Image (tube, rainbow, N blue to C red; front, top):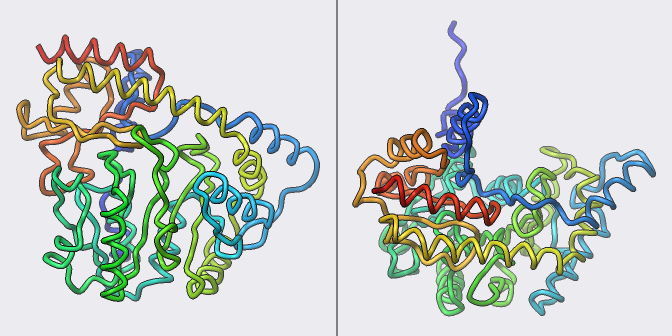
Length: 382
């Protein structure tokens, strides 16, 4: 008998992690690296969050919490919706998760049955597609265009995935940074209601926007599944803390899944999360830095030949069409790293059909690194 892994594990790797490995190998060999491959803030967690975690660790043993999260954090997240969006979101509808990644897994398992189709735009964060496959769901990729800000529309969903049981969108999106405006989001809400589809909205990059504040889909409906996280706006990637806002009919299913899969999100991270939700001044300073980095790249990349760029309404990415240079984004990014020390992500991780002509730059690092990256890119492209 030959023992083999299950087909659930036969999913694609998250290629940005492979770029990280190559960058780490260059650094270990003594080479310098400018990290523009990973969507990870270079800023630390809010000081209040760090202090709260230290105090909690010194005060008492940190054990399991309730599966849905500590009441203080659920209440604080509810308060965040009141203060930041002007929305009344009851704490009872909020579930604390082990990062947004656990939130997606829980949402997919609670809302869909094996074999169901879920529509999502392409390009998209690759873990969406890979998690769906791992839990025996069928991702139906909707080819999106710049004209719709690389976001799916009711028309494109109906044309490509008319039998979809759900639709997943991110606004702002990874890798493009593009956002759905109010009318476009409302159209998706109405279309999902009309076709009895779950609407899942990734709002992880809320707070990091450049032309006005993003509005939550919760302003339009209480039937959407919202996923968010402390990783991006709150600069807490390694704390593995996120949350979901659920329609009432999904709460018990998600609670049971959480109890069995995770027991609870990390207790120390939950304590820190309460404190982080009061650190808006510090967090807005981080966003101002991202805005400066974005301006540097939007001004300098065209001078290096990267002149077809997604709008970058939010998040900290610039998605570049590099078809004038290559039809092999992976090879292009490998040469870029080897020649200049700039680590960036090839687009095929996000778009399996057109990604060989695209790449993604992350501008979550320091301003000086963005200036130096622009200088190297201009010299290299010549």
